[in-house]
Image (cartoon, rainbow, N blue to C red; front, side, top):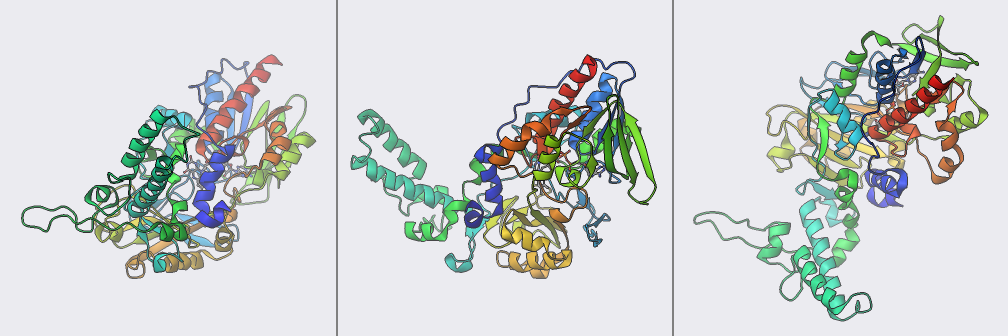
Length: 516
Ligand SMILES: Cc1cc2nc3c(=O)[nH]c(=O)nc-3n(C[C@H](O)[C@H](O)[C@H](O)COP(=O)(O)OP(=O)(O)OC[C@H]3O[C@@H](n4cnc5c(N)ncnc54)[C@H](O)[C@@H]3O)c2cc1C
């Protein structure tokens, strides 16, 4: 229901609040202690979970090898720039045509300041962060069946909702409707608070006046010299607001994870994984597609092939294995683990998601509409438009996020189309919000996460029932193998979840390794 009313992004936020995500429980860097002399570990997957495991185990003295299917590290922490090529599951290849310096983060794009393990990693690797603009009061809210399809500024809707609600609550308070719930003294304090929060007049009414306009914006803004004096703007009436459903779009920034300050790495999300891969140097073997994992009482053997030239199988053995391959892929592989762990791997569905990056010849959203970063939300199948949080006012082409869908029907619909058709759809729908789209469009790239060969989904979508049934078994050290990654965390779809899961898994693996 949340998804239908408020769109996919709200669904994602709601998921976080339904106990699937919370502030990080990170307690600071771990110290594993010393590995047994000669002990070895093979790590599967060079996303953040795999690379962090490899770094910490190497530092503890293990002989570490990492096998990674792709020709790059980072997994979902990925950035597409001009000159990159990306091939989907069915072989369709996109050549990214963005201008130099422009990019799209098709996966993770923002890092909450309260994701402490991630913040520590950025510090540790000296990766520069810049603010990610989540809530922009000048961005738009858009519902196709409200205001004749005309987008509304966030500041108008949010101020008017607050104004009307505080006026109603003031009325109820003054009429004694809350007398059973509050003391007479609290009643006066509440009224003072409501008046202040809602920009109400002295009679506790939300009306067109210069004070309310300081919050919602003016019809004629204050000027200088002989310019006309400021003119108050007219609030939208409560009935129209309720009918518009735009009230469902204003709360996103209140979520703990979206509180100021949210960050993004300067230059793209792949800067951290690149730094970690440099740190690991020759320990990572790229283009190594794992297809089978066996174990016995004394070792683990991993079978893999060259992803560029499938055919000849190779194998590598180690004392222990940390497997961070997403469950969506692992369920298609032959891995020798307990039937309980296998049942979990086979049961975990992955959420659908799409991102579409569009490059335009100029920053018309800044130049024409005074929108500098932030997100416009819509009930159209594109879900949202997010404007770049960097290089404000830079002349020349810029990339915005022209669609971000998560778990809505339109997410599956978009994934069923070719990248070209997806981009065409994003342009067609987006032009209902920004008519400049068609004239200014330069090029685009579309990523449908169910079509990404090495993950085939966006994130592990635990329901409470599934988690109760399978999570514990999947997170155990099973003989000589432990699983880790975003899918084994209570922070699904966050890098923090991947990193916390990795740290927890290797601590338990190490404890076992030194005890046998
Ligand atoms: C659309 C989207 C938006 C997101 N937004 C955010 C955000 O804003 N902020 C945030 O913090 N997080 C976000 N996330 C979540 C974040 O991307 C993940 O939680 C995190 O990157 C997962 O890391 P991981 O190491 O567990 O898995 P991955 O990064 O998926 O790493 C797994 C690795 O295994 C490799 N692999 C797969 N199959 C094989 C095989 N057969 N053999 C060898 N290797 C294999 C893959 O190539 C990959 O490198 C988002 C994710 C998506 C998809």
